[in-house]
Length: 193
Length: 106
Image (cartoon, rainbow over all chains, first blue to last red; front, side):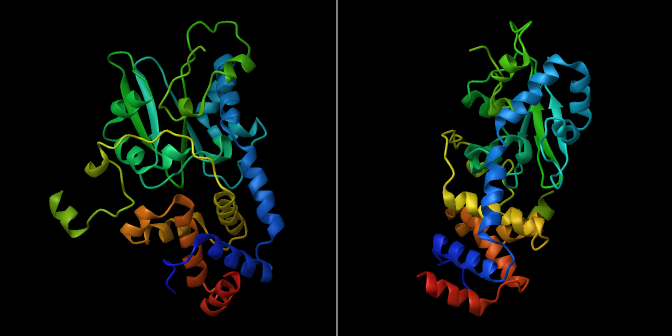
């Protein structure tokens, strides 16, 4: 069957109708899955980052096994690939990409952003990471190494960014509010508002 | 190694470092997902949970889309194309019944 001429909404409706008629996938199951997927968001990752900044024992657990640490936050990781967490430290910065497609720690951070899936990001992150960072306005101190890590279908990565200077004594909620999606991919760094 | 490159050209989804895109800025603008996007995404997840289709099969189906079409199609359009092809291939859905359902949806 030649699928290339099919209009997408029509194809989806036809397929969903057939799968429902065969009792394989119901409308309710699709709706439940959408709701569950929409619940994951960068805010979940930001909460984990803030905890890691304020609780050394949690930080150690997060770096040892990101998926298990996420479960401490009530995030459902069963069936999700393992989650590795890359810690940015003075002199070493991490950037995550999926060169083959769009592998992303979805259970924690939600749907990958559009730019993460783009041809330009996938091609350039591994060849010109500093150029990519510059487009986000991110410049690293002189002498900082960049490690670019390729996320795969079987192993997902997120970045534990550096805690900004000037946040001593802040509570977890205030710290979490500083952490954005791009900080956990490595294109940006958290900064004071 | 050039010999190997010539014998096995890089697949078109394998974009890491591809020179053609090195001067293309990354489009950082936010694109909100449509209902279509969310439904296709959820459909793949439910098919996975039920053991009907794996994420690796999804990838194989996406990577099998000819290059020109791969580049033309939107992200979730590729997913739907792959899901349909894999379900047909596995006999979960038949060609005739899909053709009939498409005619009804017209």
